[in-house]
Length: 437
Image (cartoon, rainbow, N blue to C red; front, side):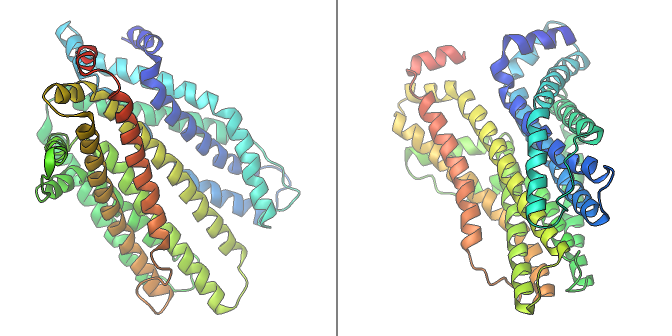
């Protein structure tokens, strides 16, 4: 089966382009920040610089690992679902579920390894640029030189390959087994754990002093865990919303009916959307509240405060990049896979404009759902942090930050869906049905 996996990769490289891109960027980010561990451990580095570099590597490395797994998992899930006919043919030909798992996991590991190896060069350049940022802000001594060593290399290769193998195993397991009850029970436990731990982490904010440097950690992690819980609940949340939507016009009817049928598949879009909205909103608002509190106190920023601000802005940048990649990959793959469906709708009497209208309504519903629940997760942490850090309950920054985050999310979802659908609709309906069949 491993030989078959390698042949599959060689014969259909375009199918694995999204996985390769996710693995490449994920490995580049992980190696870039983990090279700070190598730099901090180099001879002659002072303790303050070493602490700054180690903190950056530890915090962002943890976020990066989580995001790499979600990025690769969402891409592979869409990929495996689109290969259901191929998987069924292999099973009818005598292949066992274990052999199919080895084939798909082997494909994913091979692609992820290539992506991680390609990321070594950009990671070296990225590590040097990141160290320059710390030098320019005065957080690291000018005498410190960048070092790219075994920690960066092995962590990037290991995490990327393990994430690809684990995500592929879970995706193909869903496609080759019928134990839905056990999977739903495990999913419920994971959702419950995420929501409970997120709530406890946010409540722990009130046990921390308002001047403690670690005050921001509990509400941020709590918001992230709540966002993960809502993301795992996204199919049920979407179905609950669809039950209350009006079916106005042909496009509205097609959109609502299609979303109801494909609610589970669309979780691959809602997961990165909810995580992006929740994590970015919570981090940016809390950092803005912290900056205003420091300015109001009339004291200069300490090295720890500068480190925290740099880390938060870096984390948000990583979230934006990865979430956009996850969204674009998932939406592009899901939309192009519907070529036959679009052709059948057009043969049944729907115009290209009505099909595009359907895609637009679907995208709008997904955007509103993802932004709403991501904002709810972020708001819980923001309220807790603002209450402890200041005398108010809500931050004074207004809706500007949130509108920017929601605008990025809407642009990614609507832009990718509509542009991809327009390209698919250029083919004649009969040809689209024949090609997909």
